[in-house]
Image 1 (cartoon, one colour):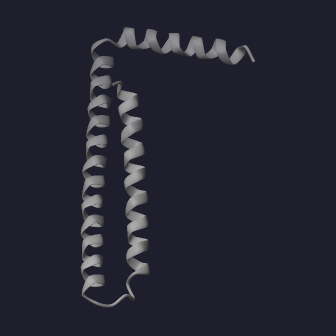
Image 2 (tube, rainbow, N blue to C red):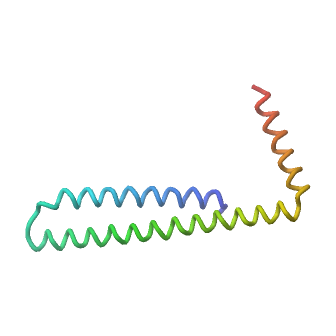
Length: 104
């Protein structure tokens, strides 16, 4: 699996978790005026699941940030070790983009 595909999957997972958390919180608010032991137990379970989802989302975000920082450090190290290769690659990408834009 490529790095960009993994990043897209992680972003989708984070968005899905945010949606689940928001939906669960809305259900919890709607059921707040329900009384009884079953309703209290239900609200407790929902709140526990919301907390678990938030924790998972937090860990996932930390993982994505850590990977982005590592990629940034690796890129920075490469550019410092091979400055002319980096300049050549940037010039090549710029040339290709310029040609593609100029075709319009």
